[in-house]
Image (cartoon, rainbow, N blue to C red; front, side, top):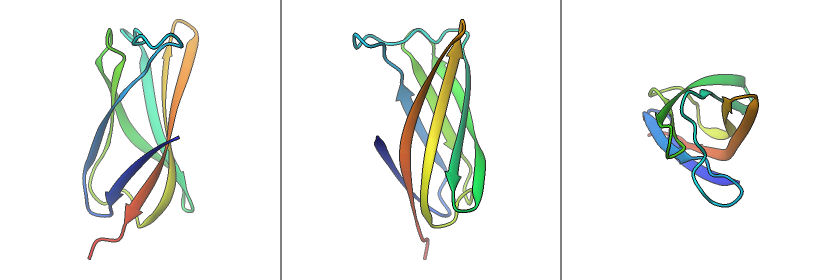
Length: 97
């Protein structure tokens, strides 16, 4: 599982590339995507958009002050033609001082 790191007051954006089992980029042209995080305070909806469908690139993002300090699980899901794939990462949010 990948790791993401940010701070409480930071905006955040990351590009995730979905790949097929043979290592080639997954074609996400026309795919629907959704993202969320789960922590001690419950489920938090995040932003997600397909950047380059042919390259399998999806951007996950959230505005500043979305998270309080702590550990979260982030999942980004892409669905197309009846097939769904999920990317998961652990998110560490540091305290802003």
